[in-house]
Structure formats: structure tokens, C-alpha cells
Length: 154
Image (tube, rainbow, N blue to C red; front, side, top):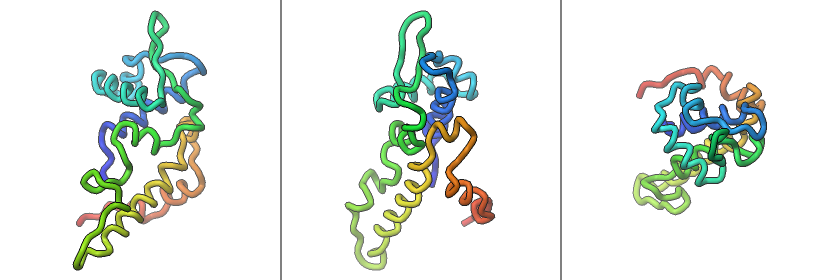
């Protein structure tokens, strides 16, 4: 799976908002600086997160962005979907809507399993988990698995 730069920055920016004092709006410039991210890219990402109801914006002298929901109610999957769409679509089609013939007949099942695996991690890690530096035990185990540490070539 390839994680887009947009998704990576979106989760990072959302984490910054998760550690901000409750009710305090953070300026886009400050968020961009905190994550060494391009300002215009951050503005686009924060707009998508606002449209999805994940962040809210506040105007004025003390304006900026803040989480629209508690950090414990926002998963990494929510953030990724807000900026990139579905977690596992094949040519923009949901895996359960696919069917293949011939030797590739079972490929749709593989895509379903991939989506399930992604959900198993991304829907169980919240912004609160990341902000606290703690992950669910199942995610910790996967990350610590030596096989997870191996980059496969080919």
C-alpha cells in the first residue's frame, strides 16, 4: 500500500491539533511549521478535514484550526478517508463491487482482505492514541513483528 504525502501530512497535522490545549485554535502557519510541511498544502489538507467534520476553523485574532470532535473519536482511517477517499478502492471501485474472470477470479477476495487488514489497524488507532504516544496492543505487536521491519524488494 502506498500512503500519499497528503494522507501522511493530514495525520501529522491532526496529531498536532490533538495535543493542543482544549478549545485553542492553532494557526495553519504554526501547524505547518510544527510538521515542516508546505503551507499551501496544509491549507488544502485542513480544508478537506474541515469539510469532513474532523476539524473546525475559527476566524479572527485568535483564529486557526481545532479538532471538531474529541481526539479519541477520530481514527487515522477517518483522516485518511477525508483527504484521499476510501482506504482500498481499485480504480475507484469498492472491492466488493469487483468481479474478475479466468485466472484472476479470486483477486477481488484479495482486495477485500487487504481492505480488512488496513481497517484492522487504521480504524483502531485514534488521534488520542498518537498524541499520548500509545498504540493499541494489536498494533504494537504488528509493528514489533520482525516481518514488519523487513522491506521486500519485488
